[in-house]
Length: 190
Image (cartoon, rainbow, N blue to C red):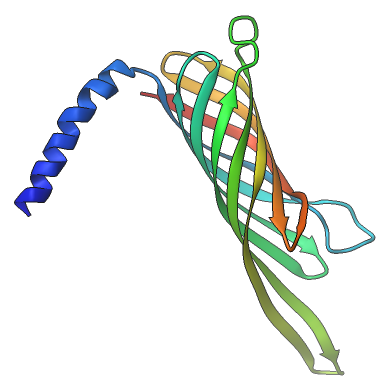
């Protein structure tokens, strides 16, 4: 127990100078918006649901930052299918024009996700009786995501941005655009 407390005290003492010298380099953002998924119904287009996002970033310099993004999304994708997804991404974010147009940020990252499909098929119907088949299919996959950020506010203390993330996956030997999500995030720098 005392060894744990000593280790914690040494860690805090070592991190204090790093945190003081890294004033306003860390950012914690949270927000929400829409999630766009492909439809399981051949006669309809993409389906839109909702998403929640949290992101923690560290700004290395004016043009590069690294971050961790945690995202969740849900959607009804047609034919009685519902999809829910939870995932995380490690990203590098670049400001291609940090002096002239610092409000644009582009990135690339490695993403992992866990997705659950819920199905509710009407398989049998009589005059007073309807039978349903409920099934769940779940899987995890990894891929590459491409975030785009447009900052409305990027002050020394606060951030307000519009985001759109394109998420691709490697699954069963194929590489494809899995889904995308966009919305608004609010952040605090520390």
